[in-house]
Length: 316
Image 1 (cartoon, rainbow, N blue to C red):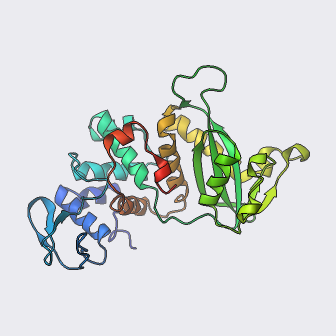
Image 2 (image 1 turned 90 degrees about the vertical axis):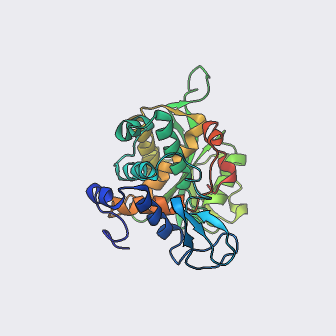
């Protein structure tokens, strides 16, 4: 993968690469079919016939399709140049950006900016992404600035998020996974661990009983009992403490401390995507990675986003 050939290096280059919808379509074709066009109907790999407005025809079965069909761009009325601009700013901004900021940047409506960002957040989750391995810290954290739907009273603006962090000895952190959970019971915690951590890994938690069955699920479970330790939580569980702190700061800063509970998981997925690519040498490469995932992510119905995407049926 080479900067300046496979993806733009800087914004000026981005503008030169994608001046119109046709240039965007051509780039998506390369990302979706890197080994040549594959007909979704008969699966033959062959050069398609091209018609107007990006429509493609299979030379064997005559099936008509387009590079955007079956992706998050399917049936969009928003120009692809706008979608590309949104992806560029979303991935190159150091801390991401809110829908309000994207609206001002692109000159679109707030709803258009909001919808594009949420569709990209869903695309950030690869269906085949690898499980965490090695030593993995796991703990829950209360995240403030979340609208829990009109509840009032002490602590009702905080949602529970369980965080898993790969520990790289002696002091480094690897990849992370996060999930918004309804409570800290074993019914919520254990399925999360089984989904995001490879069996046989060393899982470090506090002494909370919700994790007690991890050994029965094939994990080397190590409990760090904070009550009997002289170390504070940020020393005994440094990975989770660090990630939780960054997450809270990100929600407070980029999103003005206001995230609805229905969409919290989407924001967690964006934070995870960004954190796991923090060492990338080029933001342009991250832009390309997002579009690569966008063309293999199935279409999302607008009402499904508005009411909160059902992440239970998506690979989290």
